[in-house]
Image (cartoon, rainbow, N blue to C red; front, side, top):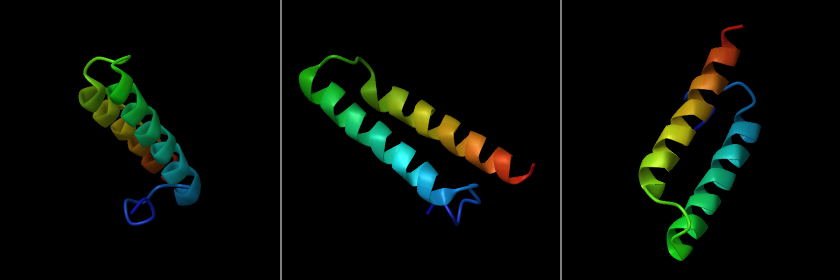
Length: 57
């Protein structure tokens, strides 16, 4: 999916997103992060924005 999105280094981007997903899951489970879903969407969007912008350089 990262490759289809035009991400530079799609394997690295997918690993970064996986870390975000796992962290959000743990944070939501133990209640240590409020608005985990909202924050996750913002973080993943930022990763994809950065990865696709790097492609154009």
